[in-house]
Amino acid sequence: MLLDNVRELSAFSSDGKPFIYKNAHSVSLQFDNTAVQSEMYVAAPDALLLGYTVTMMGFLLFKHSPGTIAMIGLGGGSLAKYCYRNLPHAAIVVAENNPEVIALKDHFHIPEDDRRLQIRCQDGRDLVRDADSDYEILLVDGFDHTGQPPQLCSQAFYDDCYQALAPEGIMAVNLLGSRANMTHYLDRIQRSFDGAAIAVEALESSNMIVFACKGKSLEMPDQAIMNGLKDLELQHALLLRMTAQNILRQRRTDKLIAALHLSAAQLRAG
Image 1 (cartoon, one colour):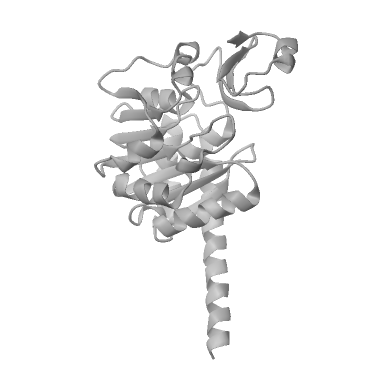
Image 2 (cartoon, helix red, strand yellow):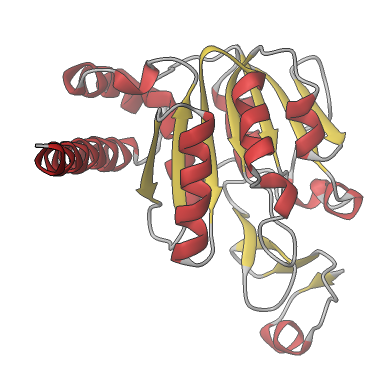
């Protein structure tokens, strides 16, 4: 279904089926007339338009040139296209469980499958459960018309995400919903990744992006992150500096909170 004016959009009820809304400047994928799932500039189809996608690319701060990337959720293919065009050494697999979403991919200029890109009609839960522990990057951005599917935010799912990653692999998860739910999901990620996780607010949105790692990649010193940022900014037209600053600020906050909890525990024990 293709809609091309505001009147049609405001009156349309899709019953949870994905549809395309197009105006002079952009094309968006939506499940209803209130929320945009993915958006693309007509003049720059490979650019990242939504702030949360830019923040998810913050994994580059810790791994500049990954060789294997897995994604859960295709949507309009924003992340898949960006990684395909700008990370030429990466082999990318995308799991999307809705064939109606995959059927709309030509509207978003998503490349055809080749030796570097595979788009599978598969539940993301199965992708990570059956993985061979070799993904350097895992991007979890799976939503349907009801929000975040239960199978993509369970403790078992995050356990499988950990196992699916290569040593020092990094996961970035897009969370959206009530603050209580997002905090609950963050707690699950922390348990699955033995505390190696950090949550930041997404740029220009109410989404929360959680970065987690299998190893110690997220402990990279502040100065090393900022030094690497100089090269990244030459290669990527992204607001990575803002994401880096948000991550470093949150790391300091998390350390302070942990220290306060430790002091309180010591006082109770003493």
